[in-house]
Length: 436
Ligand code: LLP
Image (cartoon, rainbow, N blue to C red; front, top):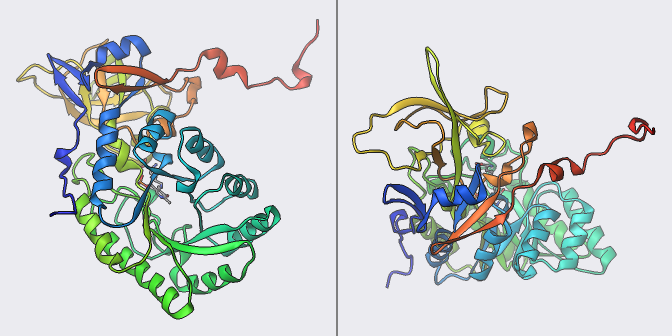
């Protein structure tokens, strides 16, 4: 019996494939979706989401575990509901995410609340909802939580987020587990904070948590951090008498964008299993990106192909306000024409850009791709994570709609706002309202 379920990435459901010369999403021709929803628009595969969740969950078979999907990666109700239906919990970082998780049907006892800056109101709302645990990141936060919980006559279950001081070896903007980051309590100070948690009213120390960064493609930093965290937890239990029910290993599993292969799920789960050996409680996991990245694309239409003396620009109707990752992190996303390139099509090196008035409005720079013409559709891949959720209305561009596809059918799961809606919440100041 191989209980590690070593599913290679290739065994996961591949939702976006060419069929009859056109890129399809789960059997639906993407040109049909573009006609119905307009472009730019996000397209998610229900089957790919399910396949990801199932593979992740299966990798932890045999260990008591709770998969708390990190909503920040993609918080559309239809996405959260897909995971909730499979038994997932949620990792939230704000009252808005709490409300989204509850509205999508995630049971409160499967919700963990992370983040360095929880307000007293957010704490109160989460306590009222009856969430599983607060991942606390500082002593001040601990004191505030104690005061809020006591005021409400409740007990907050606390997992201390410890900073294991392990370099995740990922992009500087998404690494979190070293002493240089704002996240977590330094492991050397955490013992005293644990003692304080036990003393403060309205709190129960139920676990220890960590999250060392995002888009990790090597298991080694995890192995080191898991070992440190479990060692620390064992010491708290055996020497200080704390009763810990849970260890929260955070998220961060990397996916395949360009060069680095995705993290090896089986090896990741094996590292967790090894570190946990004999730990009597439940392990909480907070994957975000790994669950949704490959399940989504951004569909866009080529507006112009502009040939300069040095460069050719493919100008899309999608922009950095839709997908900010290339501008913010120099992220690489695959770009494919929706019409299947003819065999032997000679690739052309182009910059794929948006219409926004900034040079940083790029989707792909210096990319060799089959030639595309004005009016053609393109799909920007591996865009299901940190895509729509990081969108803005910069340049007064309405947020792109989201579409979910399942078994040959599709549904708009977030509509494109109208221009009236875009402007509606602005108000003139009283002194600007001129009466006739
Ligand atoms: N848990 C905590 C406490 C986190 O801070 C994060 C992500 C996760 C879980 C989920 O991590 P994941 O499995 O998705 O790597 N916007 C960036 C990524 C920021 C990640 C922030 N924290 C990007 O587009 O790459």
